[in-house]
Picture (spheres, helix red, strand yellow):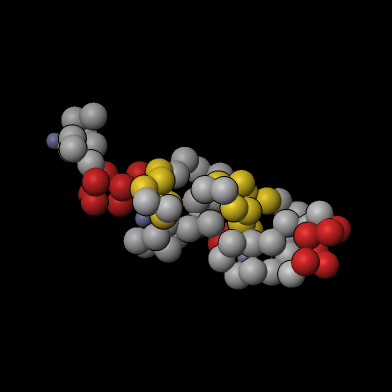
Length: 75
Ligand SMILES: [Zn+2]
Ligand SMILES: [Zn+2]
Ligand SMILES: [Zn+2]
């Protein structure tokens, strides 16, 4: 959507629609707060910490479940 780019309106990386209000900048893209979600459980982070792996974002639980070397209880 070049017309939006010219106006400087950020486009959501998930739904490709312009973002009005709060913007999440992550992984080189911009997202609606409610559309920046864990790639596994699809829950929005809503400002909570996220973990990135191979261009996808995960919540702490799923990041550790999928990629963690150490049990997160022991971490
Ligand atoms: Zn969106
Ligand atoms: Zn998750
Ligand atoms: Zn453990």
